[in-house]
Length: 187
Image 1 (cartoon, one colour):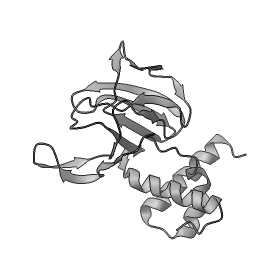
Image 2 (cartoon, rainbow, N blue to C red; image 1 turned 120 degrees about the vertical axis):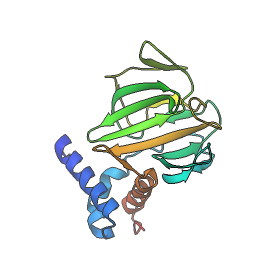
Image 3 (cartoon, rainbow, N blue to C red; image 1 turned 135 degrees about the vertical axis):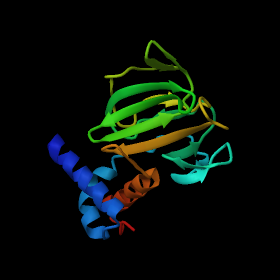
Image 4 (cartoon, rainbow, N blue to C red; image 1 turned 45 degrees about the vertical axis):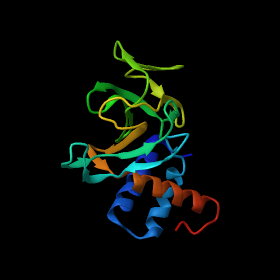
């Protein structure tokens, strides 16, 4: 079993290699941890907006710092990785949301259903507050339409040391690592 600090270094190495476009061989060495990630939306209905520049609801070009994943209203949302709730959001853009810190990573979940009260997020049996630990795959909320949203979906963003990452690259690394784990080529 690897220690927490060596796991973090291995995960950071895997991400750095992945984002740099390095060859598959060095990335595969770090991939063992990527297979542990959990796709956050239980009732997946499709992707509605990609990471990067897009035409926003107002018609202008804007940066979109996450991946929008459509699902039926009220569908469960799970934590991508274990971590600690660092912020509960309630604003006009993200709507109701959560930020979970996992080492050097922050994963952001926006447009959640439920409500915020006293700095805590409540949705069904979910009650989360800053400082609370969450497990990988734990139910952390439900699909909503809060904030700047035109339909039920999850806006899922990931930051590494403050820099926004394309969640599709993370999902690709997760899929590759699972293929390698079951004896596939990883491609």
